[in-house]
Length: 317
Image 1 (cartoon, rainbow, N blue to C red):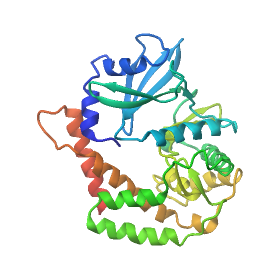
Image 2 (image 1 turned 30 degrees about the vertical axis):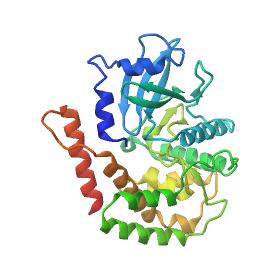
Image 3 (image 1 turned 90 degrees about the horizontal axis):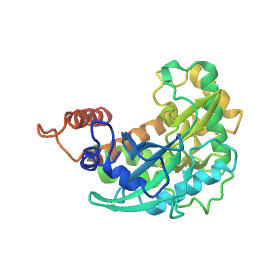
Image 4 (image 1 turned 45 degrees about the horizontal axis):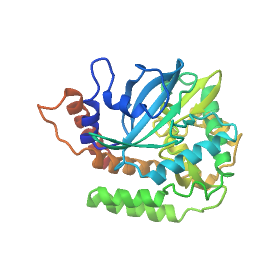
């Protein structure tokens, strides 16, 4: 998640009709239907929905202080390579200047912006999935990992790994959690690392980043793709399951192994990966919450601060 001070500044540009002059200014780098740009959400990035010739597109941008250009360029390369393997992904769109990524200097700061295709279909909620859909979900992740094993590593080498994430955690959290993350690092270092069990993962293969259409899944949001054991992607996708090893997990894994192999030894470490993920999210939230509740701030912002502070306490227990 981005810093809340930045979120506050940008969201304040959105009016009661969900439109923003800032987003319109950034959007001028692409062709689009005038008057079609509307605020969508803000979390790790600012996202606005727009249209071109009636077709839905998504503008994504963030401060240059939140993401490096190298990270963004490697993400675009990854998406384009994946799409060549016939996976359904939200592809980037070339700007008028023939760039996938535009650097835009505004009164509120400098931003990196990218425009993505909209995906066909609908997003589903985890509590509404049946066994067949869990199987399909697992198939989609298995296909993605099988493609990852075939990627040109040189083209996407700029992505971070679990080690960089661990160092980031240590730079943000309190002493007690530093001790815990160092213990987890030792456990992770002891895991076998092979071409078949370790590579570039999506990192956030949750339902929020999937669109379902006639039994097929399309994937978006590769901006956190990182080098981990592939099993970590399974853990992060299913971390909200009440019964991690129940029937729905088995259905998911049946779909997964129908597309690619799984390292059973590493698979047995799901709780380890889930805790590592919790600490990473904790560190990101700690960095993001740079404002305190204040009566002079919008109510939505004060509510978000309270929610995130509660989440921080929950993880640190």
